[in-house]
Length: 253
Ligand SMILES: C[S@@+](CC[C@H](N)C(=O)[O-])C[C@H]1O[C@@H](n2cnc3c(N)ncnc32)[C@H](O)[C@@H]1O
Image (cartoon, rainbow, N blue to C red; front, side, top):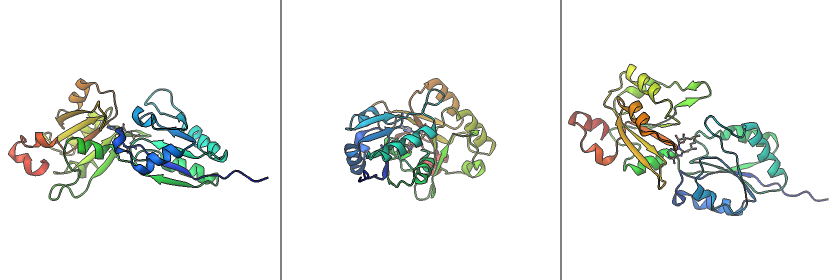
């Protein structure tokens, strides 16, 4: 009896939400898939493009979610049935997406995989405020940080981040805002350092809060954001940059 072929599992990035930011490769994979396992943050507009079965394995911050081992097992089980499986993650699958755990699980089952990248939230947020994430003479490096990790609020190299002209994209940072603010100020970051919070980047519901390190936590508290948001440390919207005090212009414009 011939065995059904087992296809490699495709890890794909949905981008930040706007279907125009989906790559053609990911669109093709979604249209060819027998089954797509997607995260909660994948936008409804993109879920609507899935033609096969779809399984929501969304992880909620503090609510119901599919435990990671169950997601791993489901990926393997679907692929072993001979299904073309796409594992669709918001943004880019290589950034804060627990990709390695899933790859290790499918490799232990003797399965293969491919990765199709997507536009990460930081890129969409920067585009939304008309800024670049790196700029000659301002920041030659960009940090991608998480606000919290398995142990709680995440610790980072605050001293180097607090130095003038640094830029960081902080994911999952809303709840950690007061902690981030405190750490950065203790390590000497200027209270006037511009910060932009972009909620629902690229979507119709995109919201932009332009603030400073000093005001970050209060700004977030007052705004009651309920969508995903990325905190761009060291960047303000291009228009707002024109009105920065001269002393800050060189560092942050
Ligand atoms: C688990 S991480 C996933 C990141 C994703 N893999 C990426 O590359 O964008 C979830 C966090 O990504 C950020 N995020 C995802 N989509 C976003 C969007 N459309 N707008 C703003 N932030 C977003 C938020 O910080 C959110 O808490």
